[in-house]
Length: 440
Image (cartoon, rainbow, N blue to C red; front, side, top):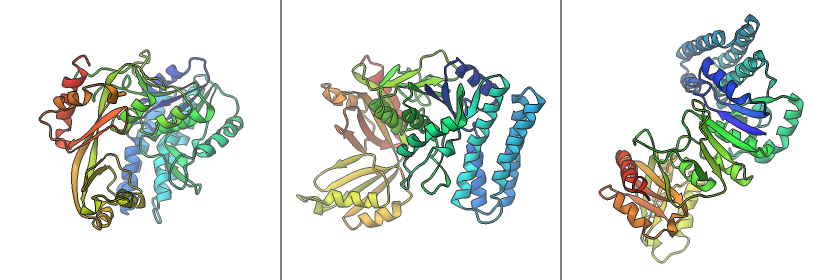
């Protein structure tokens, strides 16, 4: 069985939903993971934001506007009056849930429940339209088997232990429709896998059922060798290894959620990226195998903060790095890049929620400098460290660009440089000209 995930744009209109229905109904059984219709989650985030501020009037207006939009969708999506009525009941029920949090104290539980309604609506409407067209499709409620633990990490064992039982309870079907992104937490409350988490949902389900393949359907043909938003004439990549795809996803390639690759890699399940608008294109295949030498692609990640700690205590000392890293562990803040010298340590983070406290704690070790508005540009390829002259080619291509940090040798699959965000586009174009389009 395959697991197919379709993003918000893919199910963003009645026309697109019908296109997805055509793609999946090839007679082979599958589990289909859906995001909320495009724009819905942003609207729900905005509604929750106003409720946090106790601005219930504006929240109410936005709720009404969103509900009206969905009523139009129902009228266009279904052919029979009976199914239009069923569709409107789905909308009414979900918006009743949303409105139930517009009075009284607004909590995180309320916020997460509101954010979950986009996926609840899209999956119920899609299952209904599948049934209307004569297909044996059934809902597979994600909240019955998707769970995260107290550390907000996916509870893979729980998911694996429960999904088979839920499949049996739902009963035999050709197509199982389930929600991406949403889950329950360790306390049983509705929670989520963070934005873009529908990809991760598909991978977790694929791993749990030992799927033949996990397919992530978006609105582009797959990974490109550079960011098409900033660089012209990028090329699609036909094949990547799990490690290469993970590096690209983590360091800015928006087509894939960074955590998607891990469950698939552990269970050696191929992941394929496909385009809903061009379904005949084979897309990008991600497997355990590596193909080809040299550079495959480049990606960039914005919103990076660089932290430098200068301290004479580092000189000929041991235990210093451990003490510094304990500060970031204390505030559960991941580190992206690290560079050290005898008396200085530079590192980067992309989560600044606890930056002030981190700064205060690091002051105990020495002088702390913080630079905001930085970007990590990651160059990915196959065992690039073994290619003679590779580093010089990279630096030649980046001549004239102010590089703040370099990470090289930590992985056989990438070399990363830190540059000011204002230089990101120039850096991507320089790499495209000097490394990707020169025959290497």
